[in-house]
Picture 1 (cartoon, chains in turn brown, blue):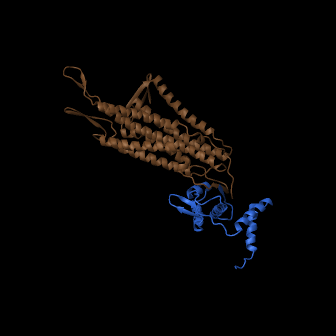
Picture 2 (cartoon, one colour):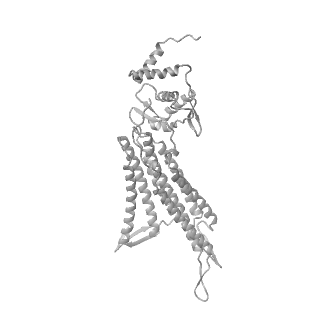
Picture 3 (tube, one colour):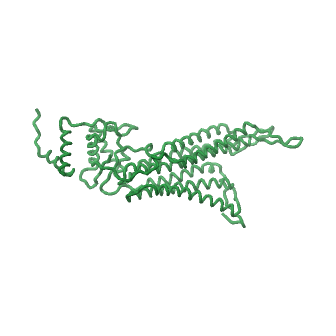
Length: 327
Length: 124
């Protein structure tokens, strides 16, 4: 970042983007406000959990820390990606840019994985355990997880379709008489292969982290319901964040394809008599528009998947009183 | 429904787990078809080696108390009730001991001493 008179210039691999101070403060302020809002909601949700014992307090703090760090990194990467595209400072290699949502997801998962691996182990000479099975399905909210799988499936299908449709590894060709023009970036195999790998790795890593949440040691001295509630909160942060990342991936694919098809919908040719005629393909234009609208819908559904609360019965933390012990 | 583990006890950890699961099965708290937690989950909750829990489950399976199936996990099989009036008398003994304020460990010691000192009846 450098200062140029009354402007702030932020450099990227493709060059610098300079804008006046007031505009800079608007962007920086918006980013800070969004991050503060997200973290504020997380901390408020954590404070609502009753923690009458020291072990419960420590467990709640540990789980909240993992979630706060992971979600903060996710939001920062996504905001950086958004501003980079808006300000024209995106990475020169489109494959890197295409994998940025997966990077955001990786940050979230890495923070949660560290949180689970460093979870306090049972101590003391007297230990207790619930004799009830516990798996990923018991701790994971169903609909965010299903939504994530839908996004992952949709991205793989779209990447496959566009790779087949593409005229080259990353473009569509506009034929106009004796000349042809390659229009891109189009999600052909050049972008499709790394993106598909990123999606598969993200889904696999998310399942692994959910398994870690399900199998981490139980909190001592609390009821089984309280312990389960804490696990479900961690799992909800993971599934909601990952489904958002995958939704952004799908939207990115649709936008990239949509812009190219929209471009093919218009081909202005200079007439001998003066003026221009549009010899583009209306069908391509409509297809491009439809893909862009679909991208917007996907983003809105993905954002809704983050903010829509779970059912009332699952949101409220139960009492943390320990269960009766049979010995 | 919980089990406890006393790391300072002279009884082996796997034996403590095995005995408590058997007691729950005999008491009807665990019924046929009930799933037990996986070895990994139970060992994480108790903070002990997975091999210890695995041994307890093996012992239970060898005694026919549980069965382990792929993708299903460890499942309780039909509980074996002692024949005759023993089961009923055992419950009466526990109830009487509680009424008289005898601690569970003292009652267990009492039963053990009875087992050591009593002479077996000649079979008919």
